Length: 422
Image (cartoon, rainbow, N blue to C red):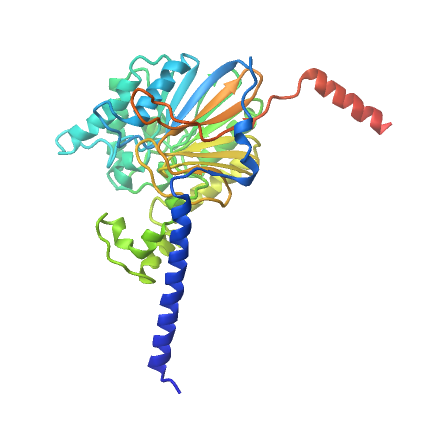
């Protein structure tokens, strides 16, 4: 009869074999779909649908996240694509920068050795908007707050001041690091609502109350104010913008690659290829269940997300846009539209399937086109291969909101319902 140590050895070998088989299967699956667009089963005919000819645009909105690591020599593919978009969009348009505008830690103090590089990265973005006649709105992300460290508030204030000093027509919202929400009327019938989602997960000092110029005096009050804003504006189309996603198939949503299970030390150093099967899976499991400070599973993020979704789920056709995860993702859930547009300067693994209608591990950003007939179309904008060809092939588009029924159609439907009741 085997001894207890022998049984334990058998169990360990069996566990190691099971985990190894699972990792090999996962790796093979990932090899088939990594960096390829995923289209959900209900969206496979997306290419057959496009706005009708003669349907006039009334406003265009670019949603660009995580531009903080752009190339500063004029060769950056996303900046070149964005400048092409700006040239076509004209005055009736806007750009929302969804945070993480400067990697790795925002704008340090003037004497800091990283200050010059930080300014260069932000200057490259500001220069792109120099002659743009539309609206430019910057949000902040965790990296802009010194990666959430206790002195992050000062980093945020420096970045806000730098943007407003060097691009006076821009806006930095919510101002002064307040949680928000703040609103911007982009066009008739189109409202933008901005939240500073980093405020809820930030360590150290955070502005709150009228002494800082904030409209709320508690962590719960912004959600009450958001509820009131959305109730009062049911007649409008509404885009809500924040840095942190509410749905994600990527790292901050608890999704990790086989490499991250097998070589967990590469999270700290890219070349730390020390295989740790079984033990290595503890790190992704921890991120899924407990979470680092910027993960959905982390208690402050989880509470913020739950409160925000409790409000948004009450309003059909709401559009929520975020960055944070370095990929492009679209979810249609609870009658709302949830975007992750954080591929402005980096890309990272995103898992296919789940609740997602579309995901792509690729640089680029999302655009929203608002038409005179009430339709709203989502477009995926990805860079081309060269500076001379800045626009790549479109890999996904979708009509998020259809045109409302005409008065004649509504009257006819009412008359039909009335005659049926008799």
